Length: 303
Image (tube, rainbow, N blue to C red; front, top):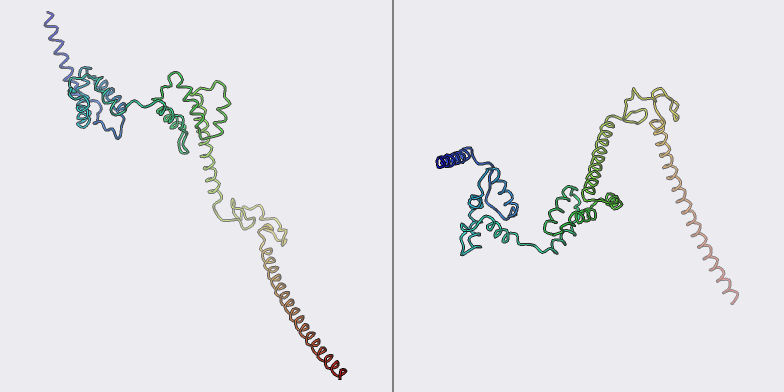
């Protein structure tokens, strides 16, 4: 009776496994590539893959050998030689490859990178938080982790107004600082988008022909309020002093007159200068003649 029950159990288990294989495997595990993924991340995905497909623990190491790829398996054989990978359990395989691909970093160096990290100019608050959490992974902050994240987050923020606001908060936690910074960032972005849309709306509203009565762009000549008003420049109805054409003509006339007067003034100045030059030459010649006459007279008296 007991033997029959055990046989039925084994048959049922095989049938269940066969049915799972026939139903197909959930998900896909690519070979490990250390240039695009960390070994720790790959193992995390592999654990989810095992759970999703309800694989037995005894088969985990065999499945890992199958999916890790020939290059990683060959590396494992070299690392554990003269032992064989098949003689190792799952935990030992993961540890050997973790030590090779990601050796334990120096805490002082990891903390240095953590405390030097500031928010980038094009980086959002959420992206900055994700980077800080990743950098703190090997810093071994322990119970001080939340305080360390809070301090580095506030000190590294790019927005000075938000930074000053957080520095005045009493009993500030890391999560409260993140929530406030995200809210401020969202509000700033919304204001910028609203301002841009208002500018676009204003530009589109101003498009069109200029009113010839008052010079504005938001109505036509027929709808202009100055259509029945008198112009303070010419006294006629239908336009403002600013748009008065007689004002433009008078300005042109005045400009023309000013040019004529400047031209006449320059001509008069040149004629006066020429007259002074001629008088100067005449005076110089008279002085010279007088000197010669005086010299002749003195010579005669000497004789």
